[in-house]
Length: 199
Length: 407
Picture (cartoon, each protein chain N blue to C red):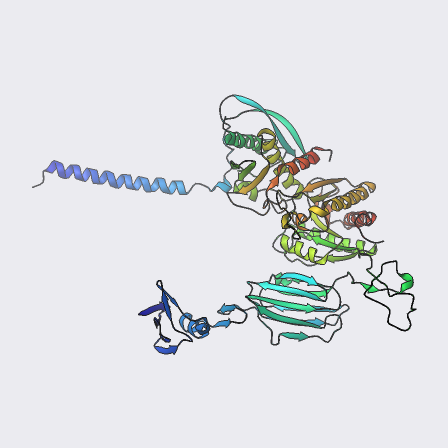
């Protein structure tokens, strides 16, 4: 004969397991219902905490169709790769902010910057960045030159830059500027010079 | 040892070292012995035409001489018809889109189909009873099929109908032609000694290469599913570029510059196809046309070459094919920009990573046209478009010497 208190204890434990199982199922469904990244309109992640450094951002301006060098003080981590990511996130912060001089699609993000090889940097953009980008040679060129020039002006020894979208190769940013090849930093610097000139 | 196979409920049985096989209950003799090797059964290739239809339940076509093997209805057939126009055009219609490699050589244009199941027409030689394009031949070898079109003048090919139609026609460029000695400069051809009695014995026959024909390729960007920039619900970039291209063609031809449009309909072309067609046509200049709602006036672009792409001997790297011609491209861009400035149209000269500029071997520029004011619909104003294309044509004509084109 099983003691009555044991039967009650087992029944209570079974009930607890059922309730927890039901709760876990609800939580999982809630997670999968989160909107996809492409529609994410939250602002980019806050910059890293810590002491600030003076950097030069190359900011595109749609009104004049030019690139402008702009100094900024932003907190930068010590690691080279994280510094690169924070630099570009600071730049995107300007583009995604109020009174943006060069509007990017909501949810545009730099997913990561990889310094994978001596002299090669890989910038991985998210889908919202590329899919929502305005189409046009000048608009696209301003964006790409701004990213590359900001990166290479502040992180030394980068000679070539490759741009990916969601970790994959992409033919063009928005129908014009070619992303299939590797950018030569010296050539991009010349374009940046042209874009800083009087339109 | 027996080896059994079941596919789609069809049973096949083979015996190691024997020719006799049994497929779906019927005996069949292979052309050589079946071999069992490390767990895999090997059958003679010559028996595939019989074996596979019975196992797969679909027709197969094996041509051992050409080393080509088609399973199912994969073959692409084509027809070739010569239009009696001036100049004549050979129109080839394929049952599926094709993308051959095209090469030209004296007297021939060759289209090579690698991994594309193009098959022979009724006869491997087609004759057209025409002096300019007298015949075409079909051949296949080592898994590759080839159609060669014979011509008495240089030929070029253009694609349409989403890659289902290839039209072969004479290029505007002309081959070497004999000129009367009185008009000829000093160039002597020792291989053409006088033989005709009417030729004075002291005067050798003279053959000269005529100056390079001034020939421009116009490329209205985008087309088909690729709409380019969408300006509003009534205006998209691909339509503006096509309208500009049609006007530019008239402007260039009125200045004695022959043109070829890469598209004259709402058709789709990849950047690679645009570059291949342009490079095959050997123009003096390539002009890509774009439109934008951003800013005012016009931007004239030359190629921004990517990193790498070293040339090896006679082979030119595809991504940096423009490298050698970049200085003349920049000269052309400056000529166009100067003409816009003269007409008081706001203009900028920039380099851009814009395909197919970097893949083109001749001078290549792209022109991005923005509205004259704040209304994007002004991109469609006939007077504005005419002024823009007139400036492009005048700018190019003004630098024709730098482009190596004749007057």
